[in-house]
Image 1 (cartoon, rainbow, N blue to C red):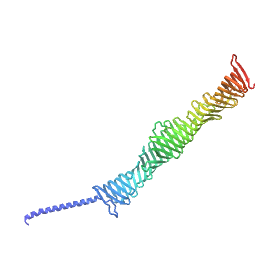
Image 2: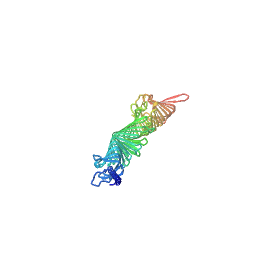
Image 3: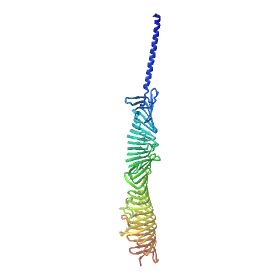
Length: 604
């Protein structure tokens, strides 16, 4: 071949070889790109008789699929997905899982998840969040059974309505809204002001029924807290606020309030059964079992017990009335018993210290006891008001022995209304006061501890037994508008329209004062009579401005316009008349230029 042709052929072949090499390189690149794309699109659906679900690639690093089966419609999205040797579907990145049935929808988000073969179970880890209806749930790790709806989680937090629950471990059925929270679960109900905190060792939830059962319950809602071996919580099914809380076993409720000027600021209630419910924003507490209560204040304490009790704790840390049945309350001052209250029904207020007793009401103190159909008691002054009451006034009410009242036994009194305190007692309406044979009847009566005076007013009648000059016991009937016992003077004074009757004589006067022996309170030492209208003695009647009686001599002395009249109408007027009842002798003294004394004998 000529050389000119050889030189032309070589460049042509060279160019052809380069072109074929370029085509081969492009073909290799295309095949690599094609097979590389097929490795990133992993069909996560399990094989089934139906055609395989469509798989859509929404991004270079995003894989998703949908399927419908027995467990409902399933959607899964993840940044990265693969299938391991055990045929588990491994999901990484922004994992989203959706499940939908006719009456159930669930959305789950996490960082990592594993779906078991056959989609029986999903294991999620890394800031797991679950939503189904109004329920929101979060946990660092959980296991979810797709067919049954059962969820198991560590450090779970659940929110629905105003209900927030956290627990170190939980088994919960998302479809049935029931399960058990264990190892120290805590409930926080945010809709209440202040919020209610509840903790327990184990809690069984049934949110469809609005029911929670718990063991080892601790309850906290300022200013109230409670402890109980077990508790039942009935919840509102809309916001899941508590409608009623039942504490069972040896339960203790503790309440503190900051109301200034309150009689009691701290209360402890113990019972085997305590129920709490909400009433118009307040906590109402009721125990229908035997209970014991202790209240503490700045100056007093109160202890109580009974068969049933209700308390209402108002908002802003105040306490409203309490109601107790077949109850007894003991008021302590500086550790010493001051007052005891008993009744079939007791209503009280821990802030104001006002207590009402109804049906078989009793007030017991060291000074006196009261029994009444109803009784009002005020702790601030230890004062009371009783209706249709009977009193037993102890000898210790007065420092010294009262007139006609022995220190070795109590006085008794009744009245339609009785009021007073440890310093004074007032009675009104058909008042009766008595001890032994000594009886006083009046419209009103008052007993003052400081002065030891007993005052009777309004149609007073008294029946008294006394002695004189160591003689046998004498009896006297007294009526007056007013009558006063004056222990300090050892005297009894009757005033206004006074009448005194005894077997030997009868007296009508404006005022009579009885004086008694200091050491022997029922021994009469003298009488002072003012404005004597009439003294009847056998067939004689005497009158004078004033008169005295000397029991030792059994003699009356009349002074000031003294007169004596017998049954035949004979009249004697004198400056002074003296009647000696033992001797049947009367002396008549007339003041003139020369004193004249005449001695008269009865019947002569």
